[in-house]
Structures are given as C-alpha cells and as structure tokens.
Image (tube, rainbow, N blue to C red):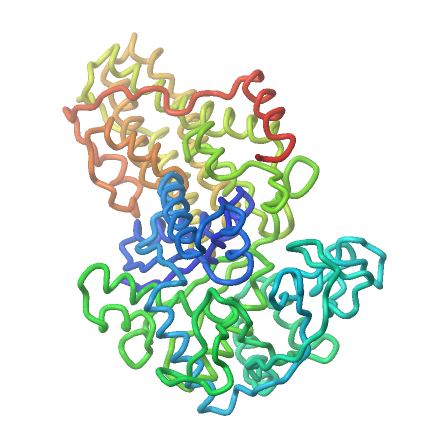
Length: 572
C-alpha cells in the first residue's frame, strides 16, 4: 500500500469559483485521490480557502461585512459547493486558521535564522483618498509599452509586460479611482530567493517526469532576464498573519502582515494540522505526512494547479521549505493545467463571465459537469467550453453509451428472468474475447490514471463502456433467448456484472452515478477489478437487483439554447 499526499491549489475567498478554476486544480486532484483510494492506497487529500490579501478586504467591504466574518461565511459557501461537486477532501481548511498563523511565523523565523530574509526600505504608492498603501495590482493606468488603459501596477494583461506602479501613465487607485497618489517609504521583508537559485535549479532538473508546462514555466522564472528575484513577503495591511519571528516580535515590522503568497502554500501543511486537531489526533498523525524525519520519507506528494500558480509552487514555496533547513516533504509531482476558455472568450471571476460552480449545480447534477470537464481537461493546451460540445458529450458518452447499456441489460433481465442475476449457461468465445479486450483496456486505463493523464484516462474509460455496448449488440441476448435461454442467461449475467465493473472503474469520474449503480445492484463491493474474469463473476446467479432510474437524462436543444442565452452575459 502506497501513501499519497495530494493538494490542489487553494481557491481564493472572494467569491464563488467558475468551472475553469474547478478543472484547473480541485477536480483532477479529486479524480486522482478517488482512483488511488480505489486501488487501496492511503490518501491524504487537502485543500483550503485562501483568505488573506487585499482582494479579501475589498470583497468584504463591498459586502458591507467585517473581513473575518466575510471570510468565515465564504469558506462555508465554498465548502458546500465542493461537497456538491463530490470533491472528497480529507480536510478543507482555512489559511486564516491559528495553525497557519503559527506555522507561517515559524517558517519566517527559520528563514531569518538561515540568513534568507532581508529588510528593504522601498517606495510604495500611497492613496490619500483610500488612506492606505496600495498593492501593485490595485493601481491602474495606461501601459507605457502597449497603451492599454487598464494595465495593473504589476503587469499589463494586454501585452503581459511586467511593470512597476511608477511605470504607469496616469495612475489611479483601482479601489476608489482617485488620482491623489503619492510615493512613500515603507520597510518590508524579502525572501532571498536569488540565493537559492542553483539549489532550486538542480531540484527542478531532477524532476524528469514533470509535465513540460510545469518545468518550462519554472525555468523561465529562473533564467529569463535577470533570473530569479528576491520577493517581498510582507504587506501594509490590517488583515493577515502578523509578522513575527517564530513566537517573537519582529522589531520594525509592527502592524504589518505576511504577504498572501507566502502564507497560502504553507496552509497545505497547516491544513493537515487542522485535520488532526479537528479529529482529536496527535501531532504525529499529521507529521507522518509532512516531516521526512517522522514518516513522510515514503510519501508520494502530488500537487494539482493551473499554470498561473506554477511559479509559486516550483520556486517560492520550495524556497521556503528548503530554506528553513528543516525536514519538510517537498512535492514529488506537480501536475499543471492550461486554461479552460468559455464560448469564444475567457472565463472571468472579476467580470462574472462564464458558468460558476453554484450555477452549474442548479442546472444539472455534478457528474454531468465532472465528466465533461475531465474528459476535456486543458492539459497540453487551452481548451474551450461550448454548450454544443457539452450537450453532445453528455448525450453521447453518458446517456447513449453508459446509460443506455445499463437500461437495456437491466430491463431485459427483468422482463425475461426477473430482478435477479440469472442462472445457467457458460461464458463462451464472445465473452472470453470481451474479457481479453477489457483486460487490455483496463491496464491502459490504470497506466493513464497513474500518470495523471486525465483526458487519456477518460477516453479509455469511454472505450471500456463502448466495448460492453458492442458486445451486447453482437451477442443480442433478446434474439438468443428465443432459441437458447441458457445461453441468453449467461450473456445477461455477464452484462449485469459489467455494470458493477463500470461502477467501480467510473467512480473517480462520476461518483454519483457509480453509487446509484451499486445501490441498484444491491452491492457494496467496490474492490478494484484487477482480474477482469473474476470481476465479471462477482455477482453470482440469484443475486437480486433493481432497475435504476434513467442514469443520465439527455440535454434537449431547448435546454441548451436556454442555458446558452442565460450565461451569455455576466452574473449579477
């Protein structure tokens, strides 16, 4: 039995996430977690809400609530939606937790001891109208490079050039729109990432099995231009983790908090401590996942995230862990994703464009979305959600292939043999040929799932469903029954066992449908079907079942047109 630690990028607190966020991290992480549990491995799957930084403060102000209250409410909202999508986290934590406060301060103290933190007096933009320093991204103006009028102070979204706020033409506060800005001096702490460049470079070189997308982004940050830069880890904000050196005060840093990018990845570790505390477990129970001196040396740690988060997880977070000098577990495999676009444009949380997770669940059950998103995961390139493609995929894959197979075999059995697995007959050449094909396909499916090749896994699973349909079509038990009821009984027995086979294999993708099928089969045997022949005899003759309701309803053209219209603009 392997031990596998899985983390997905933690969603930001300021609102409900869209389907692009879901498929870029949490959903494929859940697929992998469910698969590994299904194979009998010990899994720890952690996620949390990312609750610090200026966007949280602004979202709370817009909602007219204190920021702590707003974050607590939104954490509950996101946790409920995650449950709605059947995301099987072992713990869904909060980066504002006391555990993360203590651990972030601990890491800062260790980095300071190692000489990897320096104090920098820098000039920052202060908005007199807002009465606060403005983070770079909360200053807008015209890009000096391309002339885009809504460039942010850290980067122009139009031409992607990295900027400083002072580079902008006609700068203004993104909060109030005020141009009454001035540059003031303020002191901050910087993590000396540049001192760790060679160590990080060698570590990334050792990861030969990482996706090209992951390593290319990391290498770009390491080597392009002036290479890896030191990065500020504090901010002048009210909401966040107070700057401390371990448990001691940090002279000159009074009233400042750690920058959200620094504390958010540490929450992966703190989340495990939250899990242990919530379940009355000892520290040893979470440390065996995270400390290589306390049992984590045999853990495989896998991260899932969108490509925009890659630099933090390949460079900044590893720099924090390595720089601490302590035996913390580093990521073994980082699975990154490109972007999912929406109907000719981009999903956008800030602009409310696309389908958001709560809206998706109002329209259709989670499995419809899980199947489409995973089978179209943006792995090698960006992919696009269109309503036509969604309708076609649901109707063909889920309704016509899987749902139709289940309906035909259960209803035929009920009409000819009653609601129990029929007795009689033996498996013949057709059945043995099917078992051989399914064995080959099952091995391919397992290999793709192990390699975290999400789309290929979905394609192989669909091919396994198709194989059953083709068997049923060619075996034609409804015709055979007239001449040879015993032979038809064997065919039907195989078909009913195929349903259980499908339910187990499909559970990582469509857990609700899987549970429905297992309940209809009156079975709780979710054992992985390593031996296909044995698996196709798991339900013995005489075993009772019920005919399930329609597994997947087809999406009608009228529904598709209605949804297309409804989600063509922005959400309120």
